[in-house]
Amino acid sequence: MQNAIGFGSLCTRELPSLKTTEPHLLPIYATSSFAFESVDQGINIFLGKEKGHVYGRYGNPTIEAVANKIALLETHGLHMQAKAILFSSGMSAISTLALALLRSGDKILTQGNLYGGTTELFVKILQPLGIETILTDLQNLNQVETTIKNDPNIRLIYFETPANPTLACVDIEALATIARTHKRLSAIDNTFCTPYLQQPFRFGVDYIVHSTTKFLNGHGNSIAGALVGMDVDMMEGKIWQTMKLAGTNCNPWDAWLIHNGMKTLTLRMDRHSQNAMAVARFLQQHPKVTRVNYNGLPSHPDHALAKKQMRDFGAMLSFELRDGLQAGINFMNRIRFCTLAPTLGDVDTLVLHPASMSHVNIPKDIRLQNGITDGLIRLSVGIENQEDIIADLAQALD
Image (tube, rainbow, N blue to C red; front, top):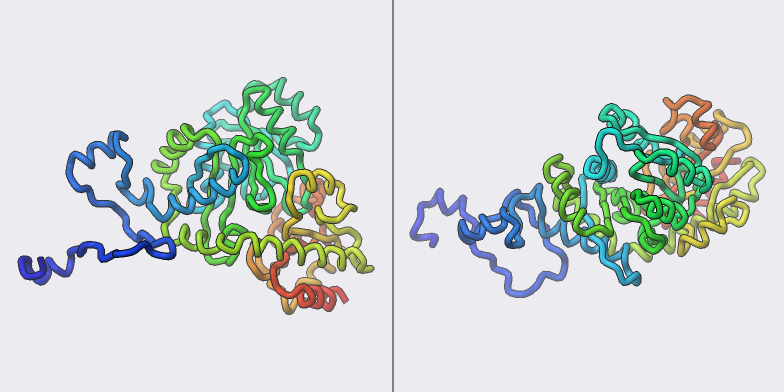
């Protein structure tokens, strides 16, 4: 071939694949489009008569392999089938779910202690489109059922458990049952737990959202999200179509980074959980700490519920400093070993002071209603040697 065409043409052409054996690791398909063997194949793929890749925004072998693995993790041992789609972020997964399922006049029932970005999406983006958000105490199941019964426009119950940053839990099975009984849909953000610690499909949830940026990837080098659904037809139909047309798709590089990170998921989550328990016990005994929010402690009000729903208690905790806002700022400024960063789920320990950082623009009364006090510190406990984590917290406190 190289002798039959011009030099410039040879420069531009793709040569035949030289693959002779299967690669040990998932390849990165860094291509924006895919070539057809014939026009007939192209027609059949576009008409849905034949499976095949067309354009990178529609799908990619790297992305789909990682999505399939996440679906398998969420259904592992459950004898059920689910479909997953990867997105450019956790927020794009949530927004695509909402755009696909809801229309003007529909309502979302959710909790007040939801991740702030999700709340902003619901209020600032969806509400002007005619999709209203109703905040309620999802721990009050009677109130939830009454609200659902009295408002036929509520289409979706959306929740997090454990919630950020107080680690409050809601009953997944009870909420999913209420939704199903009244022919509504349920969706959960399972980012904190990952499928290793918590499998919401076990309790009847319809959709699961992940910010794969966090624990699924685990290394802080990728931003992406995932949506997993039990309704395969809906996932492959309306939700996939919404992703394709809204352009909320993932890219192969970030998908590959998730894939690489997930190889150590069980090892990391075990170590995260062990370290977080040790840190929580240390903080519980410290005289400058008035309260520790960690589901693994029997003192946490939702300990029994977390134990029912989770295999272990994970990396996330928060604690209250006795002397409020200035104590929180002073503590943050004295951190030396841990990292001050507005994220979570990395292998190193990350520290956040919500009142002066993530929630600085939230009115104080709203913060306090949701347990986000002036002296609250949030930790995403890493997988370092636990004595090094505790030593840094100790010197920052003392």
